[in-house]
Length: 403
Ligand code: PGA
Ligand code: ZN
Image (tube, rainbow, N blue to C red; front, side):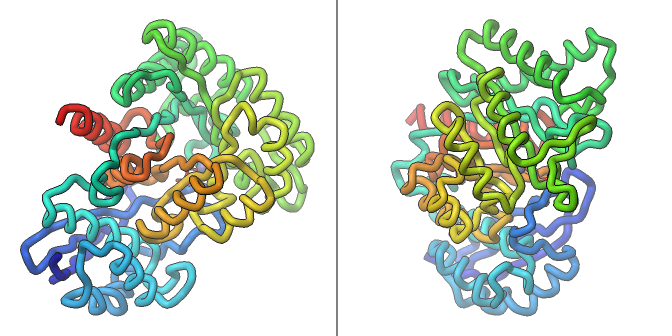
């Protein structure tokens, strides 16, 4: 396996038009890998630190690049990632920036695949991976931090749980997205799109539930398989610590009321998935909700766990959830993200690999999901930076099913 010969860093645009870090990793044998960091808007308090891209690049050039060039073999991903961690020297990548770290980590993995001539999912997961592919959760309506003057709940996610293939699931989610639009149109409600491409109409949550429920049913009939839906409530964004309450458009709910509200929603709409139903500090509230509905829906921690094995371990001890969102840039490297997946799986938690609201054309998370046999991936329904990953999953599916 060959040594890293050069790491090149630059700023490019993400899907929101913000600058982000892109890395090229070049090997002594001429291997090449390129990757870019995504960026969140409803960012968890405990995430690894994203620095201003100018600072992140300058710091990574000073501290990390000299430790990689001529020193580290690209095929040894753990060594690449350990080197990034040692070069940074903090526990949250606040020195070189999680944005520089994750871009370099992912670019190194791609450079290795270029040298090895294997697909990325196989390099990350081993020869037999790619056999189980994730069900995509498609964001079709939303608001919160992703769109102004829209629903209080951040994301309504189509969940095509009965789809016979990834390709069918991807097409079904796009059809639900379209069906929601047609129904909004029929009611004379104009809607732009939020950061992830979901419709962001100025309607309340109740109307959104009714709309998505109907859209999902229509498309399920058309496609002939079961489609449910789920939510990302982004509870930490709804929660007002001073008021000790979750603040919606017209009402507020204290923690007990929030738990009861979500439990009722799970039953009323047969929700397949509920992400961050409570604040990122409320392990207890998560545990109570999971106790109530965890047998019939996924209760997933995003801001609660931030892809961090320490926080996930606390959650496992407290039986806080039954699923974990995995975002490589929340923790800084691919190795750390895989560690979170492995800890989750060992403890019966379902890993859900995820994009961020600010994305690029980078497709690494599609490969990470296939490599880890994750049962779900959250990467939008439409929009170029979202379809980049969805279309890559369709290609991976074809690749593994047609030898
Ligand atoms: P973010 O949102 O990327 O803006 O943090 C996505 C999510 O909360 O899952
Ligand atoms: Zn989330």
